Structure formats: C-alpha cells, structure tokens
Amino acid sequence: MIKDLYTSQSPEDTGAIAAEILRAMPDGGVIALYGDLGAGKTVFARAFAAALGITEPVSSPTYTILQEYPVPDGGMFYHLDLYRISDARAGLAFGVDEYLNEPGAWILAEWPERIETLLPPGTVRLQIRHLSETGREITRLS
Image 1: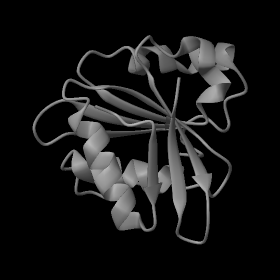
Image 2: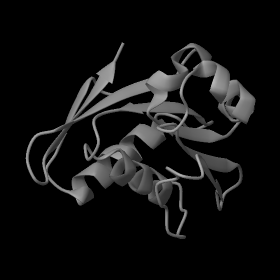
Image 3: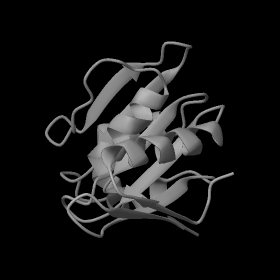
C-alpha cells in the first residue's frame, strides 16, 4: 500500500521509499512526479529504476523527453521528462499516450501537469517537496 506521506533524509531513504512504492505496483503503472526544479524527481526515478533491477545509469531525459529501460525480470520502464512538452496536444503528437497505456510497463513522468488530461486512471501522483539540502517530503496526491 502506498502511504500518504514519506520523509526522506537522503538518497538512500528515497531508494527505500521508491522500492516500497514499487512493491505496491507489481504489475506496472504510471507514477506522476510533481515538484519544482531540484526537488528530487530524477533522484526518485533513479531509485525506482534501481528497485526494478535496472543497473544502467538513469539520466533525466529533459532533452530527449523519453528514456527506455528493459526491466531484467521482463517488461519496460519508461522515464518521461515532460518539461519541454507544452500541453497534452504536444504530448499526443509525441506519442506519449502509447507509453502511458502500455500494459505491464512502469512509467514515471516528471512534469506531468503538462499532460494531466492524458494520465490514465490509477495514476499514482506524488508531490516531492524540498525540505533541506538532503531532506525531501513525498506526498501522495489524491
């Protein structure tokens, strides 16, 4: 079960939180990560990928919009950075809906407010808030 509030004091804490959230999503799904620049969205994405068993480096796809990673136990992990997408129409032109609706895939979307109307039912919405240099608060949005 995904809790309503997590507090992280380090990247290692964020890794444990990401692994806990992954355990609540055994068959894939979409995670929408909200937060300001520097809030820790990419740190969370790296931790989530590591929890999936992905060992290759996970970078922010700000310029490419999408990074694809095969999951060792099967399936795919898609890391979307929608900062450069202006709205849902631009997202559709890019084909983001095909990734968001792929059965069995894990999708993590940074800057999801750009495509809010395209997010499927059941999307896990998380707000990451900067508390201190290493501290973060991760809140599940309803």
